[in-house]
Length: 97
Image 1 (cartoon, rainbow, N blue to C red):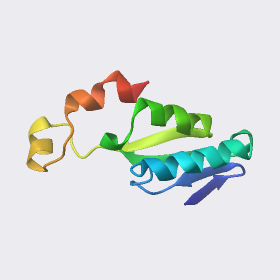
Image 2: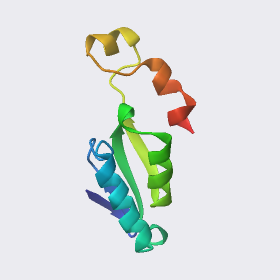
Image 3: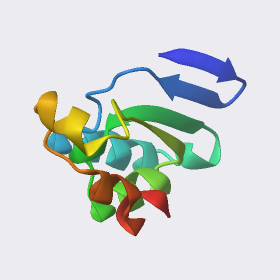
C-alpha cells in the first residue's frame, strides 16, 4: 500500500481483485462507513480477474483507477507464456470504459 496524498491510496497488489469475496467485503465496508467520500483509491489487477459487476462495486467504493498488467501485445507471446486471455479481450469495451 502507498499513500499518494491526503485522501488518496494506492493498493500495490496484483491479486487484490482475484478474491471476489474479500474485495466485495472490503468495498462494502468502505461504503458502509462513508469512506468513498473521504478516500479515493487505486489498485493493480490481472486483466482476467475482473467482471463488470466488480468494476461497478469498486468504483462505488471510491476506486478511481485500475492498472492492468499486460505482458505482451502479441497473441503469439501470450500463448507462449500460457496466459489465458487474448488481445481481443484486452481491447474489448469490457475493460476500457
